[in-house]
View (tube, helix red, strand yellow):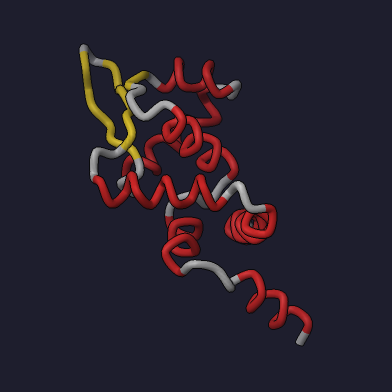
Length: 122
């Protein structure tokens, strides 16, 4: 019974953001990458440079970048035999990312978001 209550409490958020967390930003690394691209919307760079800017190891973020591109959060382009990542150009995805980042300013939202990310990692 306690677990059902906690689950209902944690699911009490904007359904679009809940789906975004469950389907797209389901790891803390992806959360960091989404934040990076939101804060740098014109960034277009390789995984190696993104890793350096975000303070992460490239081996740690490589798969996460690919998954974010597959999910439509980022775009992946080949330029001179290098993979370049950019923020999605789709206005609705950019709006959703903006809503997510703004919601992260709220402590209660962050607690709920952390709960869902940890739950997805199981």
